[in-house]
Image 1 (cartoon, rainbow, N blue to C red):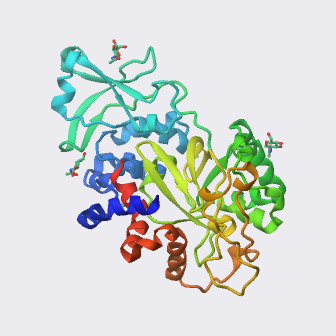
Image 2: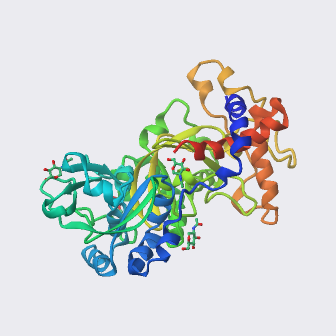
Length: 421
Ligand SMILES: *[C@@H]1O[C@H](CO)[C@@H](O)[C@H](O)[C@H]1NC(C)=O
Ligand SMILES: *[C@@H]1O[C@H](CO)[C@@H](O)[C@H](O)[C@H]1NC(C)=O
Ligand SMILES: *[C@@H]1O[C@H](CO)[C@@H](O)[C@H](O)[C@H]1NC(C)=O
Ligand SMILES: *[C@@H]1O[C@H](CO)[C@@H](O)[C@H](O)[C@H]1NC(C)=O
C-alpha cells in the first residue's frame, strides 16, 4: 500500500519538489505589516494563530477592520481570545471577492463559507456570511443566522492578488449571538469537557494515571490533546490496556498530546513527523498527518486515526477527538525493535497484520515491550538519528522497492499534505 502510493508519487515529487517546499500560499501577517491602519487586527491574527489558517488556504478573502472597529470587537468579546478567534475566522471568506465582484453579485446576494465553518463548531450554516448589495451601491455583510442585520459594510479595497487573496476593509465585525462566547482554556475543566464529548474512558485514565497533571502543566506553553472516544476503547483492534505496565500507559497517554497548539485546520500544513509529549530529545513517539480535503487523520506508523471534532479551541490549547487509539510504533509496532539495543527479549515473528487469521482475538495489536520510561532516556542522541530510526520504521513496507522507494515513502505524507488541499 505504502509502496504503491509512493511509486505513483515519485514523478510528482521529482517535478514539484522545489515548488512545494512550503505549504503556505501567502503570508497575511507580512502583507498586513504594510498597512498600519490594521495593526490591531493583524496583532490578533497572530495571537489567535488564525493567520496560519488563512495562509494554508489558497483562496481567501480577508475582511479586515480598522483599529477602532477591532477595539469594539475585542470589547464585545470581553477580551476572550477564543471569542475573538471565532470572529476572525468568520471574517475569513473561503472565496475570492474583489470590489468588482462584491458590487456586482448575481441576483444581488450570496452566501459564502468561512474559516469558521471549517472548524466544525458552527451549527448549521452559522459559519457562512451573507453578502448583499444594498440600496445606494452599498455592500452589506451579515451573519447567515436568521434575523441578522447588515451592520457591516464595504469600506475599501486594500490588496488584491487575483484570484487567490483579497483583502477588503469593512466597517464592523460580522457576529451573531453566541459567536463570541467560546469556552476559554483558562477556566475550562478538561475532565468535564472530555466527559461531555463522549471521552469518559480517556478522561478517567488521565486522572488515574496522573497524566492530567502533566497536560495541565503544559497548557501555558501550548497543548493539543487527541482524545479517543469511548467506542475507540471497545473497538475490535483496540489493545488491552490492562496488559500495559503503568510506565507504558503513561507513555501511551502522553503520546495522545502534542506540546504545541495545533487546531484541526492547521494540522494538514504539518509535513514530516510531529513530536508528542511522549517524545524525548532524541525524537521517537512521533506521528504524521495525512489529509484529504477536510478529512484529517493521524498516522502513527501502526494505524491511522481520523480527527473527528473540536472540543476546545482556545490558543494555545486545543482538544480534538479521534476515532481510534493512537498506537505508537515503539509500543505496538509488532515488529523487531527499530533500535538494536541490548536484546531485551525474543523478537516477535512479526507477520504482516493483514495475513493474520481473521479471528478477532488475533487482530489485537501486539504489545511490543520496549525498555521502560522512554521519554526520559538518551537525551544526547542526535535528532537526525531519531529521524533515521523513524524512517526505518515507516518505510518497512517500501524497503523492497529500493532507495527510491524509501525516499518516496518518506516524502509521501509530505507530498500528500501539500497536494490535497
Ligand atoms: C510571515 O511574516 C511575518 C512577518 O510579518 C513573519 O514573522 C512570519 O515568520 C512569517 N510566517 C511565515 C510562515 O513565513
Ligand atoms: C441574505 O440576507 C437577506 C436578508 O435577510 C436575504 O433576503 C437573502 O436571501 C440572503 N441571501 C442569501 C443568499 O441567502
Ligand atoms: C493561486 O491558486 C492557484 C490554485 O487555486 C495556484 O495554482 C496558483 O499558483 C496561485 N497563485 C498565486 C499567485 O499564488
Ligand atoms: C471537573 O469536572 C469533574 C467531572 O465533571 C469533577 O469531578 C471535578 O470535580 C471538576 N473539577 C473541578 C476543579 O471543578
